[in-house]
Image: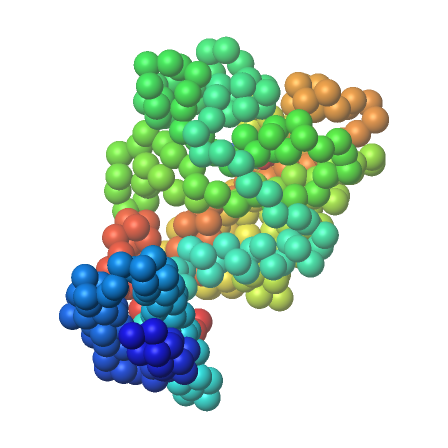
Length: 339
Ligand code: DAH
């Protein structure tokens, strides 16, 4: 009997399993109820009483050994299978054909970021769900300004202090709150307005905000920055025109026009025969805005601008319906492959 146990112990220690089949064989022989160890437990009653204790202990040892060994074999086999999976990855296979394309809005956004990054602008982001202070008050909107009214702004709840930002200008405030000048950043993002959806307007769209605050920033810095940007994005012959306008957060304020790059200023349908197309607003940061974020307007000045990304993409690719950007129609999206 004891010899038999000893032989089984040796056999156990040598056992190996290269496959699930061999593992199963091991289990049948040593672990299952009908295993050799199970049989030995059956013999227990035939063992003379004075040997029962010793036999029982030896048998229990054998059983534990079998269980430990089985677990080892299971783990070994598993890790061997995994590493052979890894070895079977062919690093030289050509990539699966790319089926997706970059969305035209992302294309334009990435290009805008690239142009401004090269002029030393950082990219910043801010929340789309905003409060009144960051979307309006800190930006010098008077209490009864029409832009605050229900028809323009989406309020998230009955609380008039929780709203969907109506422009990316909120990020100017967020940024100046966390960082004292010099600040030079562009801030792309999605904005929301309660507008009837048509070919020209949507209830959500995208803007890119720009802000540069430092000592001695002047209007000519603004103009030069925008001029450089327009030439990079629309071509070397592009001219810009800053048309006097009004925004609560800038003084003076200006609308940004670029010369129509379709007809080269001669007049066409796109520019409504004026030779110019509008791409956004801009101006010198109003001293009240700087004060609202504890920046001293006597020491610092700045310029800001905001442009519509859809608007720029529509001009650049001559798209005549803003709804196309959010309809996920592959016939539309796939036209922007590789452009
Ligand atoms: N926030 C303005 C809008 O949504 C755009 C704008 C105009 C942003 C002038 C600016 C700016 O930073 O200086 O219509």
